[in-house]
Length: 471
Image (cartoon, rainbow, N blue to C red; front, side):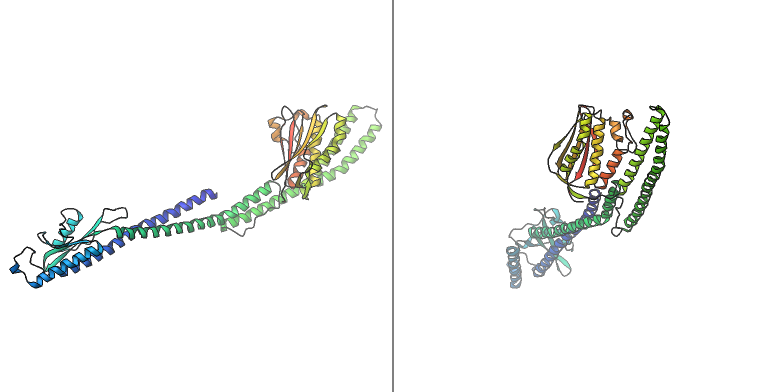
């Protein structure tokens, strides 16, 4: 769920940051350019004040000139030249007929087209430049023209024109954008960290609920959820889950108690009934078929009651987990079953390592192996082998019992281990159908598992898996 929730939050946060960052970048560029434009307007106003009283043209008759005008013109030319040398900004003062009064560099022409010509025309109309086009960092050929009118006695007598390079402006804008990008990246990192914390806070109760559900599904009915973290809705869900688990545990406990009590209570009447059957058999002729059938069914019923009681106890008793030598325990169980295997003519052998440790309840694991080996010997024909092996596999230990019996079909493999289930082909073989159910209950209590698979070319392979790490 986190992999689906995190990208959504990150995309939303990135969209918000971009929606804020792009306008901020545009505003930053505009502010930087406006600062440059205002500075150029101030410079143009200063040059206009110097040119305001220079009325004689450079090529006019010397008799019409005054020393004061010559001095002002010289001062204007000197200031324009120093301005150009110091800042690299071309500047000139032009009469209304576009002839130059003074310019730096010398010979600077009057713009004939483009934005500069528009600014010059606006200045002739008495308006200052105020809104040149925006220069962006990648616009390396752009320039900023600024024109200011020279007004004398209410009339525009000349125009001051400046033409500025944009390298420094573009550098300032780019530096501002880099700062904005760095701030956006830092904000994005903070947002991602906050998204991780938020998703963790929201999903942590969900993970705990999932783990508790898995524990209950695998038989650990005492699993509960601490309803102290996460949003209020998930805390209410955790409390509801705990109430449900309590009710389920109570119902299962009642069922187990009923099965145990019923099995225990039925054993005494059944024992009395079997005793009366034996007394009745003494009064009938030897070999009576009916009494033999009744005796057999009675013994089968007694075995079913015993298995029911064992199943109830197996589901109720907590496992006593210990660090156990699984290989030695399996080899010991093989030795214990050798007499029965020899009596049936089945070759029971142990194959595997001599010492492999795992965490298990030794009594429960022994009982489970006894049930599996008993089944293997029961269904394996004379002269065929039954092999028990132990092998480590990372964090687990696999105990396999493989026989060469008739095996099970795919449908039968899906049902093996169910209570009272027996294959239709094995109805004549003694048993109650509860042995493997008891085995599964014993193993599940200790965190172990049991699986069934075909053993080609024919036969059944049962695998008991025991964890190697402490619970």
